[in-house]
Length: 350
Image 1 (tube, rainbow, N blue to C red):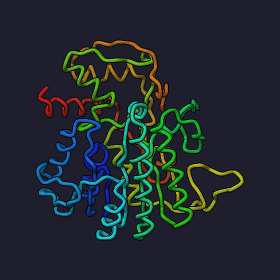
Image 2 (image 1 turned 135 degrees about the vertical axis):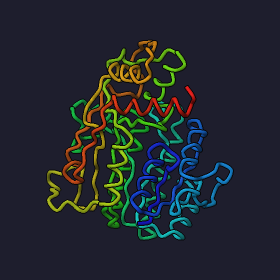
Image 3 (image 1 turned 30 degrees about the vertical axis):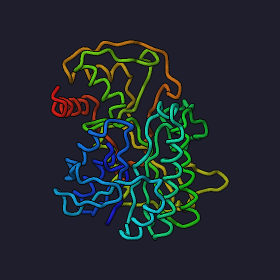
Image 4 (image 1 turned 180 degrees about the horizontal axis):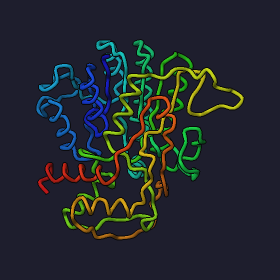
């Protein structure tokens, strides 16, 4: 297939594009390369994929020097005309939308960025799929949509009507918008709720990166909710394996869907929601100890109350993913952090 991967200079998008190439697909990557975090990390990922920083200009498609079937374009999802022209000229078979304004805490400071990218941008993707006959759309949602829900493990059949950040609210909006287009236009829409993704080339605003950086710089980390947090940390390879299986196996309508007792994760339309998590919740202090073991350094800690927008725990029920795709994430936190720390030491010469 020819697949558009948006957010391809981002953490998950980068590895997804490379995996799709490995499987023989043609990939067009798209990313705005915004400065939400260090753009050198984004350009570093692009360099690994064969794109030189000097060649990256807005609106121009460039060829990878390492992959004959990989091209890249710098563009925002909000660029309606640009997105339409791209879809018109490329005639994609599938779209994997991983571009978004990320970060729970940043959404408290700059809410409009989330509406622009995650809502307006996603609408442009949906409209382009409709107008240019792309019937296979997978897109990034988030475990953040579970919000105030404390019923564990989180299931896609649970109610997600109580988000606690605008970021989470925009991700739930994406799911609702996707269902509408699945129902009206038959676009096969699969949403993927990611659970705390980590690994080499990871986002520097996320705890695994922050803790690793603090270890090597001998700095103090902030441990919120006094360490009484639990997260379903999921290694990048496990996430990507789930994504590509969804891209290659788009959803179909649920013929057993009951309108009198509706299942939120599926529909009479071609629509499906999956959790992708390790399904093995880890206490924050245990995770910090895994970082310390991998780095061989004890990290100094400052214990603080919980932050606005944070949830106390996340824990994924991945039964649907296992049943439908024959796949369950499995990388243990010890091995995942060993690989992450090794990458960090090499990239930053720590």
